[in-house]
Image (tube, one colour):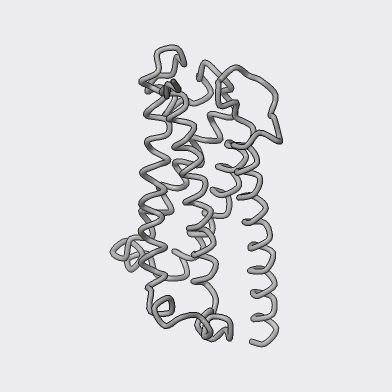
Length: 196
């Protein structure tokens, strides 16, 4: 019978956070365009068009943040892993893969900042331009969490990355999706700048 360890649970939560954050990132890019004017959007069923993508973007951000917070907290329950609360504040003191843990902690902090500053009450006080510039932190956040997921050994044994492992392949696909979407979003920005 398969027994789920805290380490397995933490890795699963990290992968779930990666998937939800990737979806959230795509929604964010879509929201920053005039997607409702696109002929492909207009061909979608009316029920899909009626969905509030802004609300979906917000709720997926909250879900991703919860998953990302639970990911390291579960590790503290695994006595063999040797992690303590100090690593949330001083990640380079981690007992395993200190630099990869540091990338994960930094991406968690960046995600917290992005989610908090996106709350309507906070965003309105900041002003749109300042908020928009600060919200660009999400691009760095995406890079950090993906690199952390790709290079961290899920068994914490400092093994080299197995690029064809299913967990790593999932992160690789998420990275590819974000890079391709980011390229198209940049092309949209350039085209918009030219027409303006």
